Every structure is written in C-alpha cells, then in structure tokens.
Length: 66
Image (cartoon, rainbow, N blue to C red; front, side, top):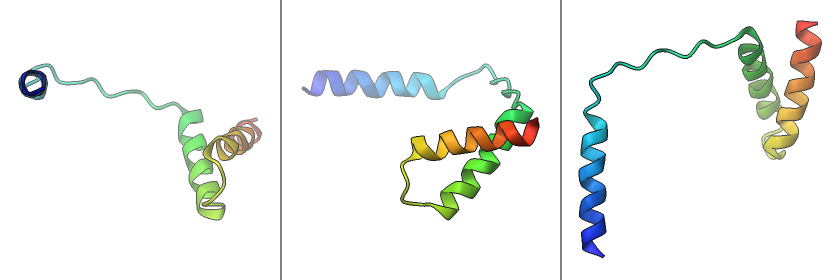
C-alpha cells in the first residue's frame, strides 16, 4: 500500500527535527559494574544465551558491590 508508506516517511521526517535536546540519562554505579561484568562474560562465553549471562553478571555485580 503506497499510501501508508508515504505517511510513514512523513512522520519520520517530523521525528528527526527534534528541537528539544534530550537530557542525558544518569547511569548508576550498579549499571556500570553490571555492564563491565556482562562484557567480560560475553567475551569469555560468546555462544551462551544472553539471559544466562545477565543472571551471572547480576550475581557478580551484587558480590562486587557488597
């Protein structure tokens, strides 16, 4: 349906012209540590399911921050 496609393009153009600058999200100490641990695990176990790696990263982060 070309009608819907053209409408979609128009809305995308409107979205790119955002005048309001976005506020930077505050990254917590936990989030930083979790990200580091997840990266480390992902490098060591690249084929392992991400949900399992996240669980292990969460446990490691809790231990680290204790």
